[in-house]
Image (cartoon, rainbow, N blue to C red; front, side, top):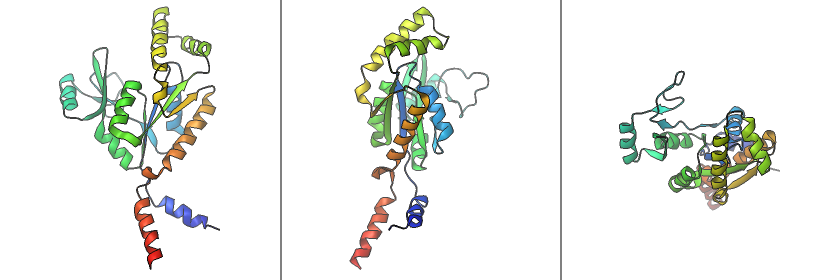
Length: 222
């Protein structure tokens, strides 16, 4: 029988490469809540810190909530390839610094991204197998409408606009690696945790395996 102490020792002494977890889906699908729960329950996962040109709000900390930049600085860095992905919202720019993500992955940390399908495409183009994408949807059209209204922040016009955006989002569901019907938060959280554990064990996230197997193989030649 295998010695479990030896097996556990091999895993504890070697570093795994982190992953980028994209949580996307319909507005009102629960992705923000689930992302927060993941950071509270998983040891090696955190939110990406975006750069933005919007004004810093009271209580926000530069480098913790956002990396605040002027538009001139942001656009210059964008031209230099500083960002993994960028977007513009109501005249303000947002982007993800590439170096901070690569350093986190090298250190075995997982990064959560709350971005749309356009940003997800760009992340996959640049980071390839480092990206795992999950699309969340409520169990029914009626439950989606109810969740949006239950927020208490929607007007009739904003509700209609969000539902139109949801229809557009739903057209792109096949681009994602995993699709979850978010019936209850705890069940969906458990599924996300299972995905993280399985994905961490993939071969390309265990860079220590190559020298380990090489050394193992060499012993057969003695």
